[in-house]
Image (tube, rainbow, N blue to C red; front, side):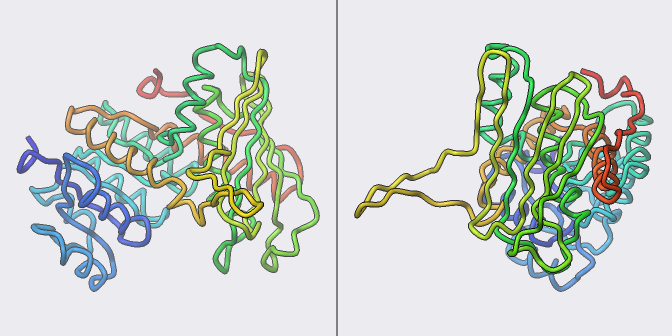
Length: 340
């Protein structure tokens, strides 16, 4: 039974994403309330909790999870802190929505996978929010219907106006292309088996030391080829597009604008400035879906296996990027708990 008839959620991490999720739970979605907020920055967490009735404040995630008002956990702390928080949640057998990455590397993700299997049931949904985007959902449904035949290729474009100081080549893979890794696996229902990274001459807009843009190629166990243009210093906005090329047709998403204006001899619309605005609706739908499933006693959405698989593909991608050749992905056999 949830307290007050709603799901009491502890939000761990109150940076940009964590604070946005606090707002989302408090003001946007239904069926849940922010029961606790957790951050090592005590002043920040007090300020965020100040405007939320009955919200407890913690600097230790494990203490928050032991709070009797907490029914579920949303992890939005930095990736290196995820493993400890997930294992603490497992000790309380609490359902978790964990922002990507599940953990920063395949070895730690595998430890989480093994710990969840010992519970005998799923507890984790990983925050790959593109699976909840309206356009991606339409593309998934179309491909699943078989109307266009077997998918042969998937073309992806992932562009950012700019990136913060200190953004590295490895982060192009781990922080950006990881989304295409997940949607490839989800859209095609295939595992990625190898990664190749190619680089044109760097853009003049790229920060010093960053080889941007790059061209990433995935091979899958279903025989599909997938390419990703990752371009994080394009200068004009945030843009995500995908086109599936199938035996009997093609389908493309990412071109739709909310408003198209014709005026004074010109036409055009707007491009979102960043991922938070572009995928705001997807984030809302993702968290609402998690809350609804949790209240039903179910766990749906991207699993710990999906988080582990993404980490393994990221490792192959970073190696391919650094070494300049094709690298095969190393995956364990999929455990029974994560088979459909």
